[in-house]
Image 1 (cartoon, rainbow, N blue to C red):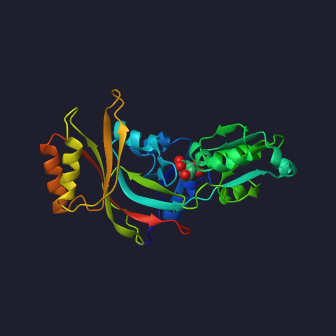
Image 2 (cartoon, rainbow, N blue to C red; image 1 turned 45 degrees about the vertical axis):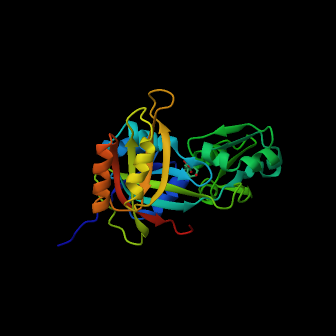
Length: 291
Ligand SMILES: O=C(O)C(=O)C[C@]1(C(=O)O)C=C[C@@H](O)C=C1
């Protein structure tokens, strides 16, 4: 019997050659990559069943969390994380080849807000006063520069964008700190794990914790639930609940499987102290080739 391979659809923050595209392409080289304009559009595509998975940025080593991703997962949808991709981020300054001779005098610099922030020191030293224009992604910025050859403008992004949109890199590695990596989530409707080998490290579980309001010592209690069970938290961070000042939920990454007996016990104990626990599932980490 002949089995026909049918490609799965993977939504990503486009257009092609964004950092998110590189992450999606590295983990799903055989699948069909569907570009979206915003992170919520990527996430909604999974909810609506238009794609199997979405790849979205979650956290950058220099700039921290991507609030839109985590807030949308908490407030708007019920999805699971089935994998995590780590990617090395190198930012370059690029211009249209038509403007190559004028690049020192660029009138605007376009990029994603995270990318602009990762190059803050460089930009204020070399291009003080030049307007920084936010785009929906680094590759969208590169595409914009390619489509406007008569304007003396630059984009910040990766070398794939320069290649894809036929731009010239005029300054390489302009990010302010050498160790620049971004974490991406692979999201799915099913609480499962990706059937892909070559993962690195231990299984990780991401939890969203909502504490009972205004009770002293609750966060301390929450931390001790994990501490005495020797459950290692690799991250804990708060985000506003959007119900008023001083009200937060917490995102915690635990280096353990959610089905482990210690984790089950932790969930029970958290419930008993009034904490609402939403698990986004247990998943493994994958590296992009150059990470
Ligand atoms: O703009 C892109 O290329 C993206 O994939 C988005 C994004 C982000 O949201 O942080 C991803 C990685 C980099 O940190 C910069 C931008």
